[in-house]
Image 1: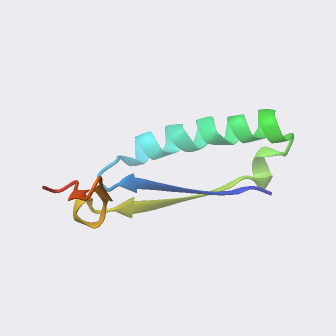
Image 2: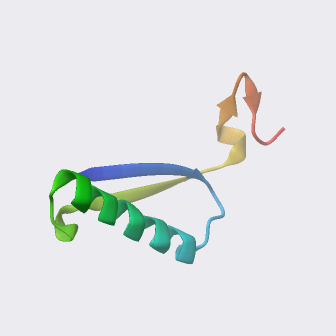
Length: 60
């Protein structure tokens, strides 16, 4: 029963999230030998102003 949390910059469409969820679920099933029904995915949308890399905000 994998629970997979994915953090992304906000603004991705539901279609993109749907396609990504399908691909991640298929990978989990193939690699971990679990059923699709046991795979849970949680998306967390993050504002660019709340994410920094190398000391710089992505919103800058």
